[in-house]
Image (cartoon, rainbow, N blue to C red; front, side):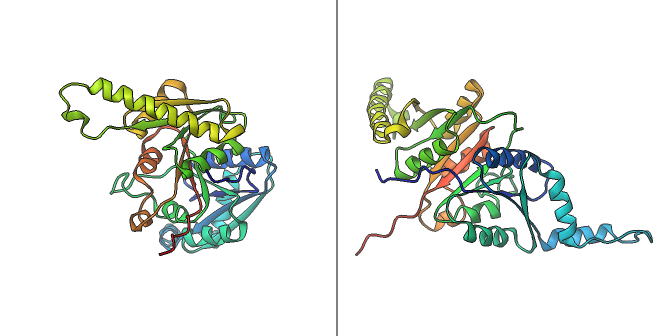
Length: 299
């Protein structure tokens, strides 16, 4: 396995659309910035459609009304959301949110942690992620924490959905560096092709598959060295996203981590299917870590 960075974050970037649930992401970002002694940036963008909608509300204003600029209005709302004893740097712009965040990340490097609210399901349901989130996840090396829940403490239970690949190794290493005091569980969900067509031997096939994967998972953790110590390994037959939700419900898991590399044109529309279903369906905060794209092999 290739070595990946285990250094903590050097910047926390809060990305917010100023929605009602974004205060949860702001509280988590403040906690992480304080814990890692990292600079904290809060960013939002005033997109054209929203600016026009606000202008409709300002018609027939009284004489005493002082019309704020779109960015000033957004900055005031942003300040009200920010929490914690953190020296926030605000970055408010007009235009596309993806453009704004991409420009900020270009200047921060690959050890910034982006913190945002949960992905909202639109008319296409969970098939396609929000456009801004999807754009961020096209970057070659990104860690994106999507916060659903209220912030009561540091994460205590973290579940890493793993297929024992290099991207999942990278995700695990980065999560361990971010949350060194949490208890980690590595979950691998597996299926067996055509198992439903078997008349006999189904239980034996599942048991054999579990044994083989248990050995593979143990080797995966040994190869991680210190980063793999004290990590519980769970191998179960079934869909990883469903298993992750069941783990959350049973053990109170607060964070689910997925790694992805994203190859091919379909990635430009959505994250890999397992990561996508976890992000949109699991009732816990989620951390998506994308490893740097491996160079193409020479012809």
